[in-house]
Length: 214
Image (cartoon, rainbow, N blue to C red; front, side, top):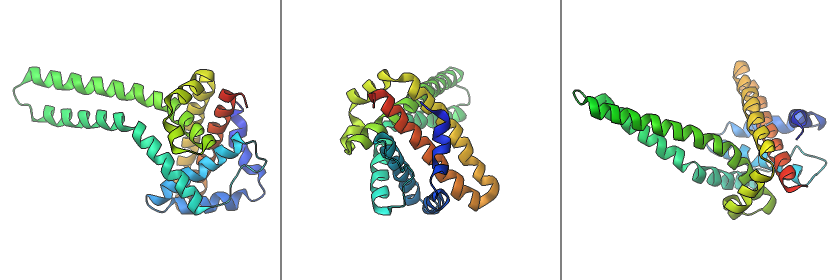
């Protein structure tokens, strides 16, 4: 894993500013833009896996949107437990607020909320490993079903756990860089958000290649 390369590869493309700016502009479209930018980023992942010389893709709206939608479905399915835990916590909090004299019931409700919060944290960390591996398998195989092949995904993580830990850490750093764009308002968001997605997607490709021995 080359941590620095994920942050620097984009600038090796002579048209990096145009490509990132266009992708960033499209990402501003509500909902569709968010799905598009995931697909655009995963094209970076595919190119890294294929060892293509030009890693930063041009905008291909239809293809990027299609790939992004499939990736969204993958992440949504795996996020269902998070949604359920959040729902339980919200319901528990509402019930606790309505408890006036039931001290025992309030304690039980609070315990349930804390327990679900802990499970949600653990599962969220696990997703930090699982989703990048699922996306890599999906991009490499080119099939939505590959994103749900538990055996393949688990094998990837077991083959390169440190690599996927680096993906998790690198994604946190890239996410922080992406958030810096809000300081410069719209112009900054356009550049930093798309750039951070490219960085994260490069990490996905690197980890997949290391796990597969490519």
